Image (cartoon, rainbow, N blue to C red; front, side, top):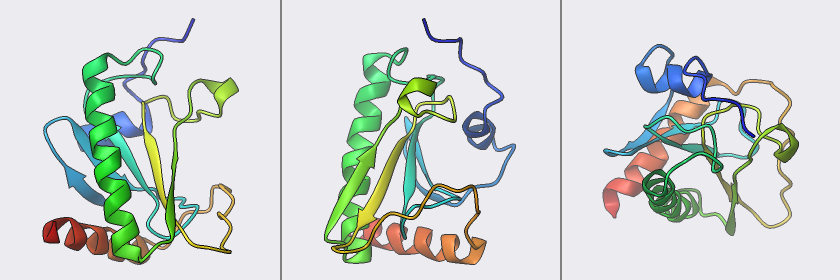
Length: 143
């Protein structure tokens, strides 16, 4: 059985405004931010605004909202970066590879012949992340 939701996780703090982030998109149910340790240029994260540890405890409304926003962001990052494809990843519990225990979906633009960077813990340059966020926001504004 999963552990209870911890409202002191990093994404809960970002959602409350306690920590900064590079916001890409926001609606009533979700927030999209740039991953600070991106595995590829344009790597962003879709977060539900309501508390959910992962898919194992999220209600259908949260899952539907996150799914809608994930699809929207997948189309946007492909267009914004001229990508050849997109990787969408979501992890549940430590055995499934989850590290931050607030439901989130990784959306990563992909390019033929370019491997994902390792998730090493090295933070990306904040100006680069801000530029990537702006590029995605501009693409969303065109839609």
